[in-house]
Image 1 (cartoon, rainbow, N blue to C red):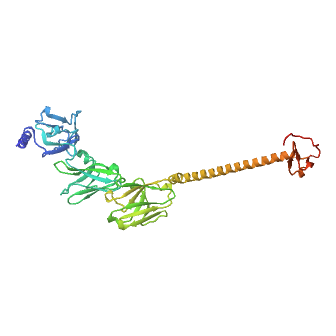
Image 2: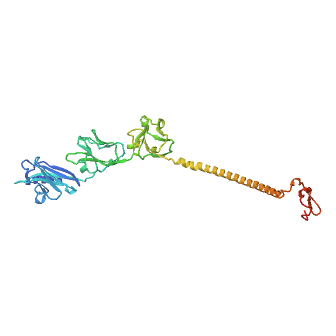
Image 3: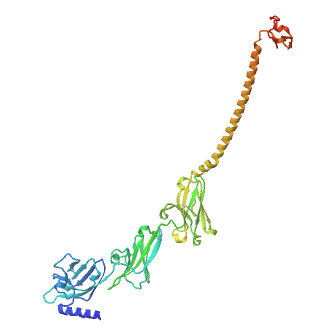
Amino acid sequence: MLASWKLLFSLFLVELCGTSAASQVEVYAYTGGDAKVSCSYPAGYETYEKYLCTEACTDNDVLVKTTKQTATRYSTSDHQQTQIFTVTISSVQMSDAGNYWCGVSRSGKDIYTSVTVHVKSNDCCDSVRNILGYEGNNVSISCPPQNDNSFKYMCKGSQPSACRKQALVTTSKTQNGQFRLRESESEFTVELSAVTKQDAGSYLCGVERSNAFDVFSRVDLTVKEWCCVTPHDVEGFLGQSVTLQCPYPDEHRPNTKFLCKGDKRTTCQTVVSSRERKDRFRLQDTRSSSSFSVTITGLTQNDAGAYWCGSDSQWTAEKNYSRIQLTLNGGTMSLRIILYVVPGLLLILVVVTSVIVYKYSCLRTQDERESNKIRSAKEEISINEVYSNHAPSKVKKFHRGDDWCVPQDETLYENFSNVPIYGNC
């Protein structure tokens, strides 16, 4: 009922103020954006003044004129070649919604065109779909079914007002770098190839609607590094061998298996595959257990780092994969030698030293005894040498007299008289 009264009022204004140059103009704008009100006028009025007004279009209702630009949110442009007069309303607010008039000043009744401005909040949407992707993999974003041939597009962001201008791909430009739009009868899909963390964010699928707001749907894409779902560490020793275990899905049994090295899955370099062998890398596929192993021999320091197991170039994280961090330790074996061998050597050294000291002590004691014997012998010899000038060869024994001692063989003292030397023997 209210709409009918507004229509009657508009017709009354047209009859009162002038003729209508065109049919009703519908303008759709989002808050914060711009609303462009474009009205056509008849040929011959190119140099006439144009304006935009509201309500009854009195002088107080005029918002802007081509002959008088004011520092407001309204600006005008007049394309005289096409006879189109445009008013741009910047920083649109919800209060800007309503009915307007495009006017052409002339003698007599002015020419008016009825305009309705529709304003909608510049955000989207009531429901949001979440998609998870992994670095280096492809991601498909399916937009809701649209059973028509309308113009379709996709942009990054969550503001519908700028989406059309910032479209990444459209139905007229289906390929743009890593983005590719595919359209079917019921829906359209945008594929992102080799996604990175910079690709994460909100995306809007847009479908153009004539005389209405475009239809949007929102998708939030999260991109994770393809590294940390099932990581495990492996330790190896320099110069020795190590075996890396790699599980894979059952459906990948006939696929080529490979092991690549690098911090990121997207940039790792293949070191061995089931189709190509390397000198120090041996790949063995155990299909019965849905896993393969890689043995690395003669480990060097350059072999340390991150490894990735793979069975498909498009293998996704949901399908199961392995990231292996190989750490090489050249000091562990030495430490074990220190802990187990060195104490044994020290014990042997202590025992040998003890034996040597003991033997030395025994030899020293024996030497001292021999020295004492030699010293005693020398002393005896020294005593005997006291009488070395008296021919002791005939001395055998002594006998005791009454008051003095006389040798049995008196020749020992042939140079001495029988004078008693000692009173008692």
